[in-house]
Amino acid sequence: MVNKKMRILWSALGFLFGVACSSGVMADAEEFENEIKHYQKIFETGSFVSKKRAIGELEWLGISDERVYEPLAELILAEIMTTDRTVAKQVTYYIKGLSFSGNKRYHTTLKKVVDEAANRHLIKHSLKAMGRLDNHIQWNPVISGGLDKVATGENDMQRVKNMLSSDIRELQRVGVKRVYYAFGNDAVLLAAVKDFLLAGYKSPDSDKIHIDLMAWLSKALGASGNADFIEVLQEVADNAEHKKVRKHAIKAMRSL
Image (cartoon, rainbow, N blue to C red; front, side, top):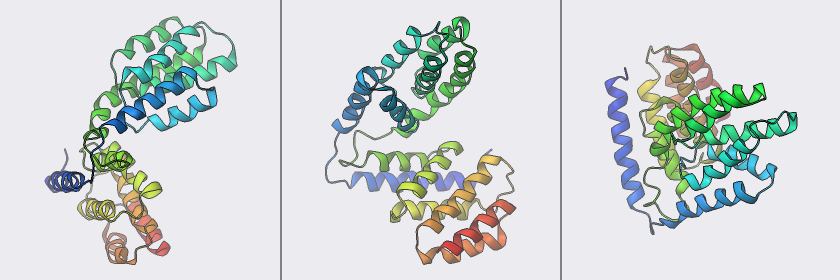
């Protein structure tokens, strides 16, 4: 069960991000469509290297459009009986990419690999992909929410906001990591990160994802270079429930 304080925070963040989104100069519904066409072209005609790179990008884009994933499904089924180790390794990446679709129709494709593939690695990766696909059935609509309404060039920012304001811990953690790696100077996102940390650092919740989320929240504030967060991090370092969270708060302070 998620505690009441965190639920109130998520509701507030959702409102805040909604207001921020509505202030964009121009909403560009075509941008998401262009992303779909971009990945479709890569999977239809691109090199394996470009496909592999694109699959790595797809994981947290929230794209479920079949135009992107049908080429991957075809590539998988075309090599379902391969015994060539190099080809099989390539196909494992395609299987991974298919799992990011969040489209239940691809359970059939993955199940066919499990039942018929000649290479045991394809079977193993397909079994894992089926579980990952189930997650993305839930996650993709959250990640991609509102992408037809945001200002031009802000799709990735909106995805981060969606993840942070969700009530799915795994997505929250990914959202915080995206702040850490790509949006460490955004005042709105950093304010949200601070509020998340203050709302959750004292929680006795021993769930590993929760503890890791709190640690990443501290890291994101530390990487911001903003000394205004020292007081918050000191509070966490002194009073956090879990040792890992206290440790990361101390490291974050040292980096400011």
